[in-house]
Every structure is written in structure tokens, then in C-alpha cells.
Length: 569
Image (cartoon, rainbow, N blue to C red; front, side):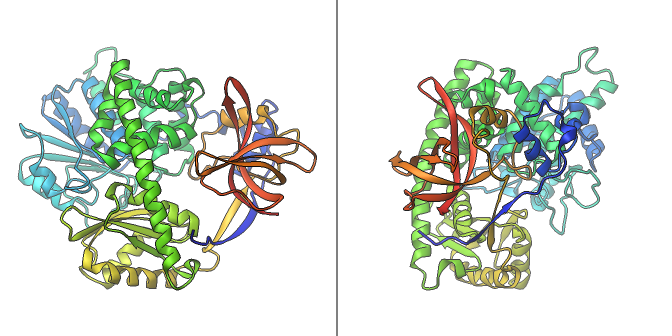
């Protein structure tokens, strides 16, 4: 196993939390305060608190789509093969039909053949008869050539996206993207399904003003479960606006007022829908939906979300669950091989500025997950590449650490070495790209040079930021339940992480790769714990960073510590 980075433990600073009220659990009061929440009103997360739909281009987009519905033109949603793209595609399909569109279809490019986004090749693969209006979701801002070809074919294109724009924007009829130049929308953290939700809300407003719906316009809130899933699964920052979207979606899920397919994804994984949390979306529903795009065809995942019949939806969910198990098996093998590569290099792995890994046997749909694991373990930006179907091109995915902007790094390399990177895109923390196979050594060298120039010692020190120590009284099921029902937690609004020094008892391996154990505080309080994908710790005492959660086993519920990091104390 490759050596990890240096680690620095740091407790989050807290401020006065008295204004949150005595009905908020005392542990939660300090957790919220450490995240800048000091007023009870900030915890309400009401729909009325959403930012108004003042995105650049949204009025033009709403007019094009509303006119298309009124004129019964043919729509085609151009989706993406991840959970964000799948939820956005499903949302558009459901909403446009509810708005009265009679001809609505969708297409998701085959990631193994056509790649990402609205490409010229995808225009040739569109369903017949040809659509009149294309709506991109979670893609399109970089589709200059694809939009040009669609325009030449007489189609109108509405781009809805959230990725960073390149030097040239596509010549679309309308572009809605909070990250496009000149957009003053306050939340830049909307994901693809969030942008689609705002765009469709604007379409609904235009149609309602025309009297299209009579007295009963469809309620946009009915699709917030999809918005919540896509937002959490895409790991965008949970700013206040996104937290409202996620919380409102979770409330619908807990009340079983969600899409049957989403409920089925949670159910087949053994999750209690009534207690669904953002963690369940991130680590249960999201991966199962993503498995379709990684291992097979995201149309399966979209079919699951669109299905109205609960029994058929469960059949789809079971298929996705099986794909996810297959994905885990492939990912485990690839991760082991990736770490073997790093162990085999001459220099210590932690001295490498950026890790660039490739194996011709690797699965293209899983390289992003491998890059993420390598990044987490070594705390270095990492790229993992797989061989494309033609045997000459490589498809790669990168993941980064705070402070190293991955898309800017790729743009810098592309500018210094024209023609080296035929295609790339992404944002600060994640990016995708293609390379000629014979250019991998040059790319690796160029990226290492950028890493050496940009990365600083402080950036390469992994910070374990915690919410401090829980007392023996707080190390309880009551606290675990309070934390579970709070939030929603996610990127930029992290789930509570606590630390402590514990005596280590009763370590044993479970499930081949996990350690089950008991931790004992200095005061004698004991709690069961589990450390995933680790070997037993060779120490009587450990400094542990952990999450506290309820754990149900054979009908008995107790508090459990989920170990994130540990080291001998």
C-alpha cells in the first residue's frame, strides 16, 4: 500500500450558538456554529428561502421551451451518464410531459463510444423523426461543434449546464449556466439537475402566465427528490440554496412521496426510507444509479427513475444493485493494481507531485473512482486512465485536493503543449480528458511539472478537521440519532467528525477488508466501531477521527463509531 501524506489534526472553531435555541441538541449547536450557522432561521430550509431564478439566459430558455410545448414540437433531452445527468434527464422528461409536451424523448451518449456531451457524432445518433428542440442537461457548455451541427440541421438548442465554460461558448438559442461569464446568480454551486430545475420552473411560470394550465399548474416540488439525489451524488458544495433543495427532497423521500425507483434503490439496499439522509443518497442510491452509467448504459438508471409502477421500479433497482456489486468488484481489483503501481516506483510515492496511472485492462467507467481513492490515500492530485475501444486513445479521469484547480491545470498543460490533450473538461476538484496512448508519458511529465510548480507543503499536508471530543455522556444513541436527522450534510457542509483517544479492544476482520472493534474512552465509556478497508491497528491505544451513527443489528439499535482515520496514540 502506498504511503499516505502527512496529516495535521485541527478542531473547527466554534462561535456563539445560543441563538439556535434550546430545542437543538447541544452537540448539534456547536456543530452548526462551526459551519457558520448561528441563527435558528438558517435551519428552517424552507422553499421560500430559495434564490429567485435570476440566471443569465433563463428567460430566453423558458420562452423557447414554452413555445415548443405550445406548438407541439419534438423535444429531445441530451443527458449524461452520471447520477446528476440521469436525475436531470428524468426531471426534464417528467416535467415536460406534465407541462403538456406530447413528443419528448431523451438520449444519453454511450461513454465508451461517443464520449461526453452533445458531440457531432451524437447528432447523427439522435432518434427519428428528428427533434426540433434539444435540451442539454449537465453538459453542453463545451459543445461548440455539436451545437453548430444541430443548428445546421435546423434544431434549436437550449444548453443547461453547470460546468466551467471554455474560451468559446456554443451558439445555442439559450444557455443557462450559473458559471457562464456574466451570470450574476448568487449560487455557483448548482449541479446539472439544479440548473434544470430552475429552468423548468421558469418554463412553468411562462406557461402559467399564458393561462396554459388553467387553475392547476403542476407543482415543481413533486420532483425535488430527484434534485436532492443529483445534488448530493454530484458532490457539489451544499451552500444554503443547495441545502434547501436537498432538505426539501429528503422530506419527500421520508414521506414516501418520491419517485418509486428512488425509493426502491434505498429499499433494495436495506435502508429505512422514513429515516433517509443525505448520506443514504451519497452512498446508497447514488452509487447504484451511477453503476448503470459506469458498467452498462445509464438508460437503465433513467428507466428506473421514470417508472411509475413500484413493482417494475423494484425490478430495475435490483438490476442496478447487481451492477453496483459488479462495479465494486472491478473497482477493488483496479485499486489494488493502482497502489501496486505506486509501490513499484523508485521514489517514495509521497514525493510525487501528481499521480498518473494507467493499465490497459482497466475499466473506463471506473477510473474516476480509482483516481479518487488514490487521491484520498496519497493526498495528491491523481489521474487514472483506461484504454478506449479503438486501442489507440486513452480515456482518463482526475481528482484533486483543495488548492489545486484541476481544470486550470489541464488548460495550462494544453496551452504549453498544443495538441497533447484533444479534449478535456471539468472543474476544480474533478476532470475528464482523452489522450493518444503514445502521449501518456509526455502528459505525465507535463502534469508533474505543473504539480511541482503549483503544489505547496501546506497543500500537501492532509488536514483532518474535526468537531472536537465527545464526552462520555454525549457518546450515545441519542446523539447519534440527532446527528442522523440533522443536516443535510455534504460537500462544503461536512458531516460531523469527532476525535478522541481510545483504548482499542476486540479487533476482528469482517467482510474480508473491514475491522470491527470496541473503543473505550478514558472515562470508561465503550462504543462499538467499524473501520472500512483497513487492517487491524497494532496499538493498544489510538487517536481516532470518527462519525457517530445509529447501527441496527438484529432488531437492536445502538450507537456506532464509523472510523474515518486512526493512528497509534
